[in-house]
Image (cartoon, rainbow, N blue to C red; front, side):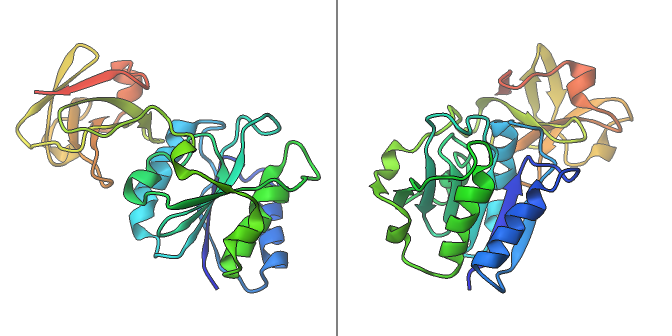
Length: 242
């Protein structure tokens, strides 16, 4: 049986995560479910896309990725199951944009079965589809095929020298779309020239630095502080490597 990796913005105060996992267990008894994240900022597709990008290299081939960050639930957005080296189940809203840079989709299927609730597709559409794939049942049984080239993607691109602030982590570090951070160099953001270092300890407390983060993207941080607050950074802000 294939392992299911579950990511959402449901939080842990309400029973939503537990209900989705209960459906998975009922439909695929014995399935192993690994929680990737559930306290993501509500409806923040960029943050969720980065979380999947960060986790994906550590998920085995054939894994099932169940991701539900769905501000358009109940609207005309499509519900899909997508096959690459791994399988992806969730809303067709750009959530998987960065993951598909690492694992391009080869086939896609529309989940077009009626849902009991217009606002809880994680329970009614996505969990049953993920369980179906975890059991290695034919993906064609999930619904009609789609052209993977027509799947929704966020307007994001990774680059070496010029990019943007992609999102922020819970410490206030700004994760950018730049894929290199040569130590000793500089990066410009928000009108500031920030030194590139290897670790936080290479600048005094309260000072800004840039470095290559654990996901292979340049990050901007404040030693023992929040770069987002101290530097007034915003998502989409231009970042240029000097």
